[in-house]
Amino acid sequence: EDFIDWWQHAVFYQIYPRSFKDSNGDGIGDLQGIISKLPYLAETGITATWLSPIFQSPMVDFGYDISDYKAIQPEYGSMADFEQLVHAASGLGIKIILDFVPNHSSDQHEWFKKSAARDPVYENFYVWEDGKKDKLGVRQPPNNWQSVFYGSAWEWNEQRQQYYLHQFTKEQPDLNYRNPAVVQAMDDVVRFWLDKGVAGFRIDAVNHLYESEDLADEPLSGKTADPLSYDYTKHVFTKDLPEVLTMVQHWRQLLDDYSAKHPDGVTRIMMTEAYADLHVLMDYYESADGVRGSQLPFNFHFITDVNGDSDARDFVYNVEKWLIYMPRGHAANWVMGNHDNPRVASRFGAASVDAMNMLLMTLPGVAVTYNGEELGMEDYREIKWEDTVDPPARNAGKKDYKKVSRDPERTPFQWSNASNAGFSTAAKTWLPVNPNYLALNLAAQQQAAKSHYKVYKALIELRKLPTLRRGRFSIEPQSRAVFALKRTLKDYDTLVTIVNVSAEEQLINLTDFINRPQKLIVEVAGVDSVYTPGQALSSSALTLAPHEGLICKLI
Ligand code: TEU
Ligand code: CA
Image 1: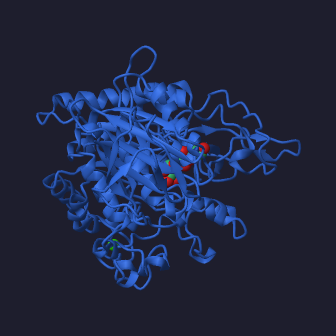
Image 2: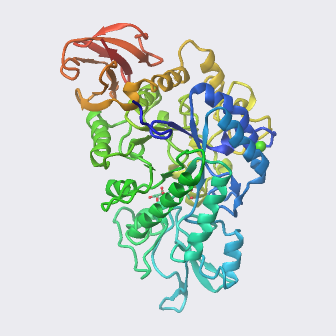
Image 3: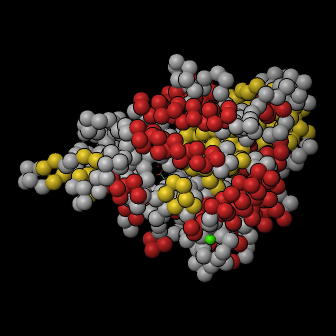
């Protein structure tokens, strides 16, 4: 019997709304655009999607700076549009997860304006501190804390005559979670959207929620000589404080209580975004004393710990370490990309797109796909300084912006070879469309006999097999170049995924790994593969092309 809850084996598809589909020709993606593409998601086999922020925002950080947590950004649509989205998605069996951004609001939020004015209700909603005077009597920030996006994490506020903390841009003041009124206000936001019918939240930058109260200087890292760079210091007083775990557990309780009371019986879930040590993430799943937190603490190891230079052992090690440390009774998750990091084609090389999707989709647990990865969309690295809008890139300046810009992975979705890749009818889109859209687009991949999209769709279909839903799992390097993973389930076919991460052709013998000499029947092959589904191969002498991935069943 299959005891898997809706989220435990889902593919979560991340939509970056600004770049997904523009319905009204202003060059900016919107909710009606998403609604118009729901049939595409359903046809692809997607059952859950998480949306980057759609709330009212001055858009300094493209929605991660929220000025009203309970309102829809007008350029994205109205509350009625949102309700229509949830309804239409639900009709197609798709759950909607929203981005919850608790660490900071916009400086245009009423709360911040009132806090700056020392309105007694909001006075302690943010992290305010007096400055220090240096030897010359010049005002200086309270300590050396750095913003993730460059420069001091402290900004002087004239009105209040104090500094406020901002771990991201200065337009994103950090909320003060040591104030119970803030916790309450945010619980209220969570309930508001739950009442609108969302299935849960992706919680943004959660490990930044608390900072130590004694304001000690961060120790220097020795990594860079630039004192304004985030890498200049370690972040022991501003990240991963033990209080974070308590808040994660608090939100889990809120979601569990809500789910328990709701007649539909659907589990509301959270997925937490933290680039943190393995131990920290495992505690989010469940603390040592057995308190449950995040169902899906994002596993970013395929983004942060492997790349195009990694060998087979690096992949195996990264997969194993998550599964070894994960407490029993939880679902693993694997994030292959997001709007903050270069795309798969740019991290691993365009030739690896199918192999990485095969890996993602045959591992046990939840797969997370960033929109466009089903086509193998590529970063657009040639965005000019004049067209650059990402705040850390603007902060880095004209000489260095390309090193940190997140714009390349956020360009509009490439639907077709129509103008603006079918994303928008506007004369100018908010970010330029990657000119490779003429060849690389969904319509072309739907028409082609073989394409990344067709491979991706086949993988989602394959995931319905009981073996992939709940089969046992093992993974081993076959050499430095090739690793293989195996899924087995009593009374069902065994499935094997084999990946050549090297740039050379490899000949391998899989008989040890699968226990006896057996025939392999190809289930899914990549776009450039010489193999075709249904073809029988010998397990003792298997040739893999450079960067080839292959999924076979054993008979
Ligand atoms: O990203 C969080 C983020 O940038 C940090 O976790 C950072 O990577 C890390 O601390 C560096 O060590 C989220 C969003 O995904 C991103 O788009 C936003 O810009 C950011 O939060 C601010 O809301
Ligand atoms: Ca629009």
